[in-house]
Image 1 (cartoon, protein in one colour):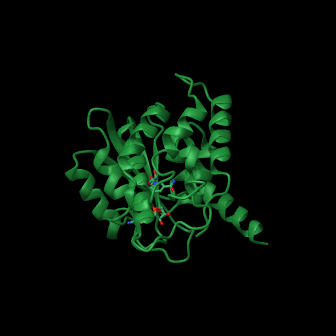
Image 2 (image 1 turned 45 degrees about the vertical axis):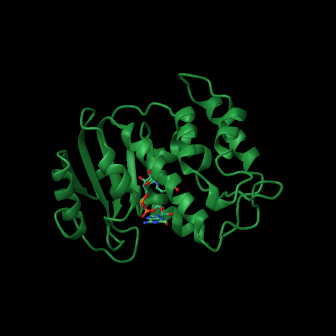
Image 3 (image 1 turned 90 degrees about the horizontal axis):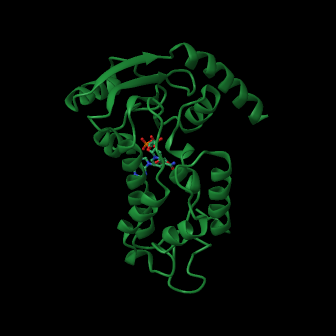
Length: 245
Ligand code: NFD
């Protein structure tokens, strides 16, 4: 997979854009934030990267998430991002500063000039892949720890399994939801956005998720295509149909 050309300009531009359109508790120095982020990997052999360095980036870009506003997704990337924009007052990781800055970008460093590899992020030992995984694991952990009130997770009934135990949601988000702040997990199962249609609430991998949430001692609800979702599903499928043509 190719890497993102001019990632420095994109990152700094997104950062300025975000601050111009959101009320910030603290102003962020976008150039300094880029330096904090890029110094983790720039000018280094990918296998020498210390991903713990990304903690500083997360700390500096951290923003509060409104109560009842956190939305997690697994297997529903396009649907969920489109949905939260339409409904409003809902936030995925990619809608808040840390995630907004780097979402859908690909980056990795190299020892030789210019310090960033703009050709490829596949190295023989797979270090870049591991670094990227660690990065998103940290981002997911931060996002989960920032949640409060009632949170939502939007799953795809057409994906098998709809709830995957090796997903970022299962490994880094669910286990990091704070017990003193989060009071309920709303499972939303979307039907009809993908071909197959496997489990409903109370069955298959959704049932496994329900038991897991109980083991984590959280209250939950589960809904198959609830009102707003079903309306939105029509809109979404309509949009996809015309986008393809
Ligand atoms: P997904 P999810 N190993 O749709 N998030 O629950 C590797 F290497 O299945 C955001 O995993 O949902 N990659 C972003 C994996 C990235 C693995 C990651 C795995 N075991 C996490 N599992 C982002 N913005 O890019 C999944 N992936 C890859 C946060 C998969 O190929 C969000 O807050 C796909 O590109 C959301 O609540 C991506 O991870 C949750 O974690 C998502 O897979 C979504 O992760």
